[in-house]
Length: 139
Image (cartoon, rainbow, N blue to C red):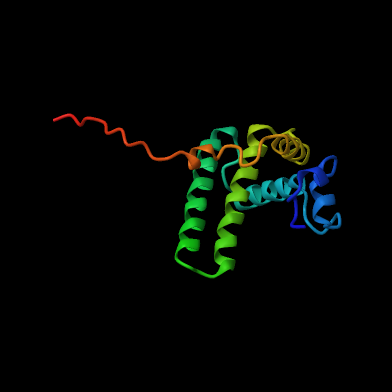
């Protein structure tokens, strides 16, 4: 069975338990957030809550670069590196927005919440036929 295909098997289990990854091999969100914070300080990047809008904008830019890399068929490693840049900026913004928030716990709560939602939630717009109603244009 593919990972997380059946939400019934996922109930009450953490992401680490579901993936079978041994603790310590993959950094937790909290470990990664701490490491990104160390990088920011070491390299002299913006380190105040005033920087949050820039961090989120940069995350969006990096996501666009990942999409562009994927679309152009560039090596997977390049696309993955761009996605990791997105994660870096998101983690950095999260530590500036809510320094005491535990991202591991937040992830588990959000994952559990999403498992309670209906199949393909949030994608309903994709199943709707296009509207044939033309909007009159202003002349």
